[in-house]
Structures are given as C-alpha cells and as structure tokens.
Length: 87
Image 1 (cartoon, rainbow, N blue to C red):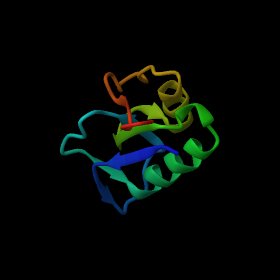
Image 2: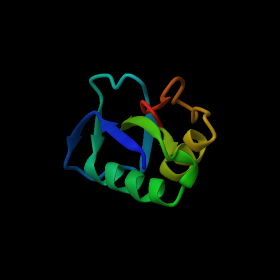
Image 3: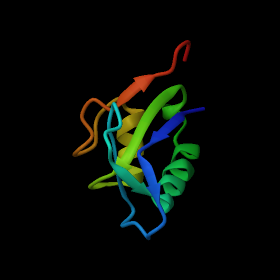
Image 4: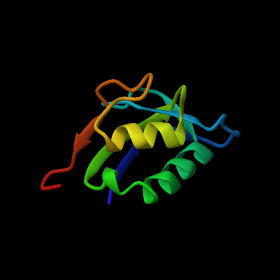
C-alpha cells in the first residue's frame, strides 16, 4: 500500500499530468489527477510502502508512478519519493 498526500484539490478537469514533490508546496491538483494516480498506483506493485506527495505538474500519471516505483523522479519530481516508517 502507498500513502498519497496531495496539495489542495480542485474540481476543474485536469490535463492528466501530475508531479510528486516533497514536501507538498502550496500547489493544487485536480481531483481527477488524484483519482488517476490512485488507479495507477494499484497497478504498480513497486510503489508499495512509498509515501508520495502529489500536485499538478508536467508528468504523465503512469510515467510518474512508474518512475516513483523505481525510486526515480519524473521530469519535474526531484526528491519526491520517500518510504513510510516501517515500510
């Protein structure tokens, strides 16, 4: 299981792009981006035990999730991947 923290959520349609950033700045993220990220995390077992901080960004959701699973930042997600205590 992954833990996902988000910037403040907004209701407008998003572009399907996100960024993992730690700590989450005052950024915002469309609710559909949060939902798409959660679905992608379910299909990426290598993200189990990670704590991911999510805001709107330039990374395609699936690519950002796969990069996080490898412990790598996406294009704009440097320093965003951590582990949960005991995870």
